[in-house]
Image (cartoon, rainbow, N blue to C red):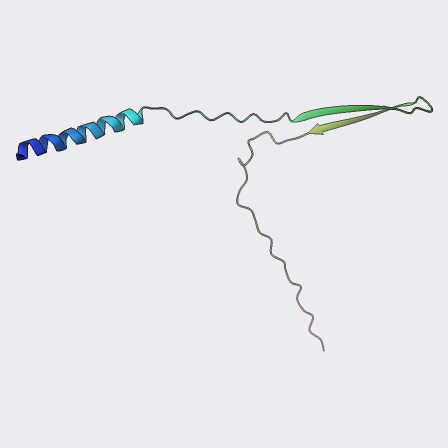
Length: 92
């Protein structure tokens, strides 16, 4: 083979790779599912009836959370607490 044919083959391979990389670069990745935070307010009510006296007891439970951001948004590095040893008292 002549040098000219080898040069054309090399140039063709380079152009084909360049075109393939450009094509791949324009493909959008799959979108992640958005984080849907649980509601920050909840309410539960339970009613009990005493069978003997017929008295109703209503138990209400309210749940309020102040976590409005995604988990991990404001979390820094975890701090490791070291046990502080008490200084020994010098005996005389």
